[in-house]
Image (cartoon, rainbow, N blue to C red; front, side, top):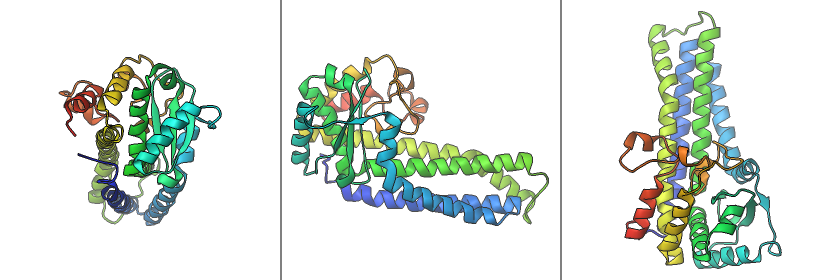
Length: 300
């Protein structure tokens, strides 16, 4: 069975592999655009932006996610029971106590963020605190702590940033074609066609990779969270209640949607039945029905 530690080193390796792969892809994309537009400076700009954004993603991902969600830090005196639950689970998982935040929203949701266990934060909605039983809340928080232990958040954050860079580069190239006149590289039509195809397909491919990674991280965190609490039904029951929420969270944001335990944009944005393969490809989370089924069947 998956645990908080079995996949940690694997996910760390995957983080650097993904960062390297995306960097190479961005450089290749920048080279193709520079050849098509006869502008060699484009490749240098692309590399510089990729490196800078990688650094920002690594060091500031927690602050950005917290700010976008509108979460507020709470003290032990303000939320003693919440602190007790998170502290107990953290000790069981062998993790330091993360910073704890509250999101003022009636929906049931939560997320974890941070580059590593020593710089992690957990945010939970007021709806989760009010509507979940203790075992259900423990299941949700164990899921989020599993993300921290598995280093999933760093992987997802880096991929999101790099996928965004690819989208910006593609948009810049397409706009340059529209407003840049007849400037063409020495490769003429061949490089132009290659760059044009890359500009159209690259953002789609990057997005699909990002979403696939996010979905797999959710399955792993479900399995690890169930192992942590030794009570899979707690998380399964919480996910069942989440599926009944009918509205989006007040401060849902596309940049952080993948961090939450369930898509914050509500049922219209959540994955449908497991059989709708095409729909699932463009979802940030696997279908709630499938996650619940796995938990209750003991399939990891």
